[in-house]
Image (cartoon, rainbow, N blue to C red; front, side, top):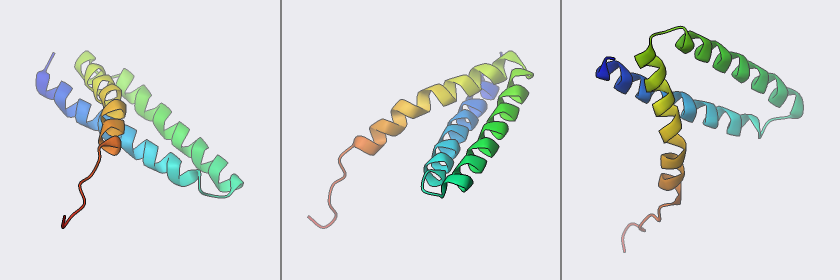
Length: 88
């Protein structure tokens, strides 16, 4: 298993998660018809992406799963941190 491939795909898995999250949040603000069509497209893209990754080597699958698995709790932690007010 190539560690650099695992690391690169972990970053890709993280990016895929954050992109999907942002897209779904934006679609939730749209009209019902646009929302449904957008969610169908997002689902199809995710299925194609996961199918491609599943067809790849073991290190690619492990890296993608690690990246996508670690990102949600880290993302929540970053959003919940208190931010200091500038100038005080």
